[in-house]
Image (tube, rainbow, N blue to C red; front, side, top):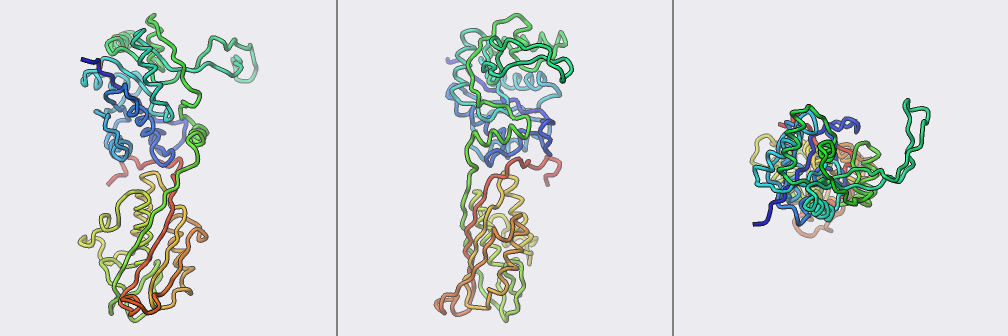
Length: 401
């Protein structure tokens, strides 16, 4: 039977140097959490049989919902809470990995989103040959030593120096022994290879890649986005119809118009805003307003559609997206829309977080043809674009309903 390989992706840190509202591994990169990129690299490595994720305590459900479920990461077998120190988090991951029958471990930092799947295989090969292996790259900058951070003391020889990366590979039983020795001696370490070195065990160096960066500061996040390429742009289309009926207000784009008939619906039936909402949800792959705001839910009775639009925009932000542009066309025989179009565009822009110049509201008629031409209803067609919400954080668990 083949020996089982488990990747432990450690993402339990607070990321305080990033300065964001949430741990850095949950910030968005290219429209998805940083952690999901690191997990995707392990998922794509053919040598990896299973993955254990170590996240901050209290973020387990959040990790499953926002970093795993949307991205098809079916190799993940366990999500466990980490500890105060790195060795505590690695120990928690190790316990879960041993419970999965791990023989070999590939430990990867959840803040390294750009690791290549082939690097996992190379590190595993090195570990199998030597018991432990680590990815790294030679230091290319000139290294200066300074005691006070102001004056240079000496210039160091950079030739023997390497920058450590992850993944790091180990035989599972050897790492378990090393962690036990560290606990007994009260040692603290910043990576598992350092612990092996202290125990006098051989650690094989495997050539990594310069683009396998660790995201620690906002500048690192910008560099990672540049390495990924231009931000993704998604396009969505929304289409909505509503009947006209007496005794109903006519609300379009949040503007109430004087008219003998109004649109019939469970909410305020703002067909213009509904088309925009459906377009945004379609672009993000999040369904439609019928699923999000069902017409049998009394909570949405006569609801202000601009408020519902705000909820759609917030939902996009949870998934790392923001509106970029909105173009919506109303199809109606009357009343005249042109005088009110700027106010409608301003309302939509305000709620979507855009400038009015990024929103266009237009109107046309059917030249008196069909049901709309007979004044029986109205329809609206929206085309929208969304882009990644770079640097935005998913909401903390305490904010969830």
